[in-house]
Amino acid sequence: MAMGQSQLVGSSVERGQTLFSEKPVLVFWETTRACKLSCVHCRASAIREALPGQLTTEEGRRLIGQVASFGKPGPTMIFTGGDPLLRDDLFELLGYATELGVRFAVSPAASDLLTYDALKRLKEAGAVAISLSLDGASEETHDSIRREPGTFRRTVQAARDAASLGLNAQVNTTVMRNNFEELPKIFRLITGLGVKTWEVFFLVKVGRGTGVDDLSPEECETVCNLLYDASHLGITVRTVEAPFVRRVALQRSRVADYWTGTMYQTLKADLLQGAGAGTGRSTLNPRGTLDGDGIVFVGFDGSISPGGLLPLPLGNVKEQSLREVYRENLLLRQVRERKLTGPCGACEFKQICGGSRARAYAKSGDALSSDSACILVHT
Image (cartoon, rainbow, N blue to C red):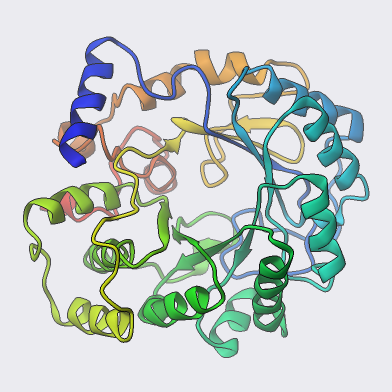
C-alpha cells in the first residue's frame, strides 16, 4: 500500500499537479468565537460572547454557496467554533447546506447545549458526523484541560447518545505533555463507546495553547508509533498537525521494530492489553492533507487561512472567492508543491509528509520552514 501511494504521489508531482490542487477535502468554518468552555489549549482563545464582525446568516449562506461552487464531489464542510450551537441560525444554515448538496459535519462543544435533542436535530439536519473532544481517560484529566466541570461526563454521554441515534461520532484528542501517557486508556474508553474514528491533534502553540507544555520530538515519535499500532485495532486513526505519522507508517512497514524505548514499550503494552489480534492492516491514510493542501479554513469574520492553527490571512470570503484563493494563492501552491526550506525541504519523505505548516509558522513565522516536532529535523 505504501509503495503504491508513493508511486501515485510521485507521478502527480511529475505532471506538475497535486492531489488537492483543484479543491480541498475539508472546508472548516469557524461559525463563531463564542464558547462556554475555556480550554487551556484553545487555538481561538474563545470567549463567552460572539465577537463583532461574525458572518451574518446571509454571509454564511453565501459561504456555503462558495463551498458548493467547487463542484461535485465537493469538499465536506465542518461547522466548528467556538461552539456552533451558540449560533441561533445554525440549523437554518445546515438546512441550506443540505439544500445545496454540501456534505457537512459539526464540531460542538461539550457544554449544557449538547443535549440528546440537539444531537437528534443535527442528525435530522443531515450531518454526516459530529466530532467530540476527549482529552483524558478520566474526569480529572479531561476537565482540567477543558476548565469546565462536567465536560468529561457530557462528552461520554454525547458519544452514547450519538450511537443510539445512528449519528457517526468522531473523537478528537489533543495530545500534550500532561496527557500523552493516557492515550492507551483513551483508546479503550472510546472503542468501548463504539467510536470508530479517533483524530489525535498534536499541540501547536497558538491562542491559549502558547502556555501549554508540548511534547519533545522523541515523545512525538513515540506517540506516532503508538498510533500506528492503534490503527491496526479496528479503528480509523487520523492525526492533525502530525503529518510525520505517515512517514512513521512507511518506516514501520519496512522495519517493524525501528522505534524502541522504555516509554513506547510501556504505552504499547498498555494499548494492546485486551485489544485482541487486530485487523492486520493500518487505517492510517498514506497520503493525507496539510494546511492549505486539502484543507482551508474560514474564520468567524470571513477571513481565509490555510488552517485553523495557521492564522495567516489570505483573503476574506466577503470580498473574494474561496475557490480562487484556494487554487491560486502562492503560499498554498508552494505548500502543495512542497517548496519547503530546511530539513523538511530536503527530506525524502516530504511528499507523503510535508511537516506541520502551522507549527513551522508558530515557531519561525515562516509557513514553509521546517517542523520542529519531527525527529528527523534534529538528526
